Length: 508
Image 1 (cartoon, one colour):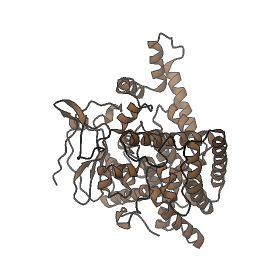
Image 2 (cartoon, helix red, strand yellow):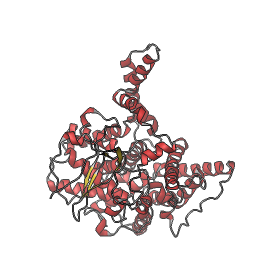
Image 3 (cartoon, one colour):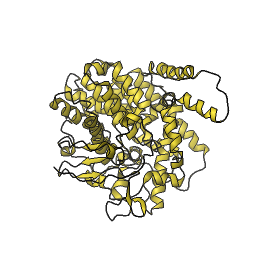
Image 4 (cartoon, one colour):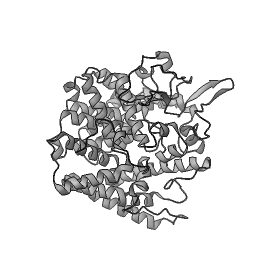
């Protein structure tokens, strides 16, 4: 197989630890395709776009347009992949131009310093530049913050775990710190004989491949989902049934479930003829991309290279099966199957396929559990996801595209979006989860969701009405295609057929 692609030449604009400066994007390919020779590290240091292999013809395609440039005679210009006018949209640049909080290029040196230094040492350097004397020794301040982070990790199984505070205490490295802690806590590093250097490199790459410019689909969201997944796996029914393989897959799937999310949803990619949509035939576009990107990182770092090839491929396939389950357009499919099992009382967690299905449902719950968090946390997540919706709507308006439902800031509010989402998506899912695992945690989640819904209702009454409010989807028609679908970046664009699922997906 001969693969030809052009690497963009561009100075790095995102700070990363020195030991991964030789690599700037995920390499993604199907589990059936073969690996290619290692490129020149000097080229990798300039690479910004991820690469995906279509299993049908193994054609290399760029799958991340964000910040991709090619050198031309007139300077740097967006690289066009076809004649379509929207394929070259640089979402981060648009966000910056529209003024929604993205950091400008002039702040890159400051961001590098911030990430390379600890929070307290960065604060200390800022004070020195302003002529403010430092009165407390640096090592004490560093130990204070790392000590607080360690104290939080001791309570990582609490449902009121504040991931935003933890992210600040770890200097923006919440996903790395949390995932590594959980793998160590379960003894999985030793059990699977994972090389700690490869593991660290893998986690750094995962965190870096989440787009920090996304208000919602970023590494903090991934860390939050990972923490929720841990809470569910500690529930009595699962804790006594899950194998070590189930646990490591659950943790890694949660950490990578939105890897390299572009901050726009599947309908946007489809209506702009984006090559990601073409590559995955308009079916579970983002989820397939997240899965293939995760597999790319596993292979690039060689995290499972010491395992037998058959076992490694099986883990990749089952990782894909878990990630693909988060496709919100298939919500009714999974929920109906879950109800059927519960009605027939035929779930057996000694059965491997049944355990895998419950892991899929647990990851689905973890992915949309924000309405079930305490109000202070839930409100922050609601505002962030709505901000991401509205940013997409602004891009669509700017480029004269039809504005996606729930993405028009002039026709929607945070409150009505959240109340519709809770009513038609979250409540049905968590009601069935409570039937499966009726514990203190499940009752707490339902209680928080009820209070949060009431709080949003009260805020709605206090706010002036918007010009036109979007009607919520009816529960029996298109619940997964309404507010629910836009929350996670998908709509019901046709269910995924069995042949589109990874080979490791299991049907009970």
